[in-house]
Each structure stands twice: as structure tokens, then as C-alpha cells.
Picture 1 (spheres, one colour):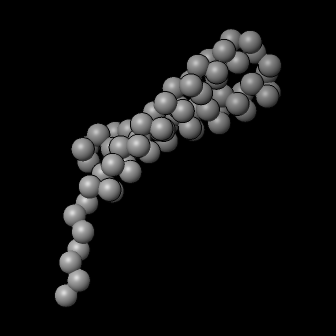
Picture 2 (cartoon, one colour):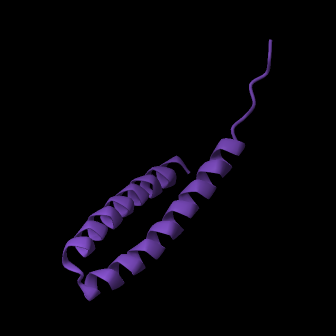
Length: 69
């Protein structure tokens, strides 16, 4: 589970950086091709980020509780 979370975390970070970069390129060039690519990668970014968040919450919730002395 830890490896999967690491991979999803890095993928989510890379996709977010890609979104920012494409957004800046769109603002400077107004390219219709970039707008469509930005939209599709935005959907992928949202899905990957939500899966990462859900799995992270499951991993945190499944941690054993510490017993108080």
C-alpha cells in the first residue's frame, strides 16, 4: 500500500505541475489544441488526486492505535 501511495502521490504532483505549465502556455498562446489537452489532463489530475486522497485516508484510518500507559 505504501508503494502505491508513493507512486500516486508523485503522479498527482507531476500532473498538477503539468496543469500549471499548460495553463501558462494557454494564456500566452490561446492554442485550441492546448485547451483540449489541458481539459483532459485536468480530469486525469482530479481522478488521480482523489484516489490518492482516498487511499491515504484509508491507510491513516487503518493504523493501529497506541495504548496509553
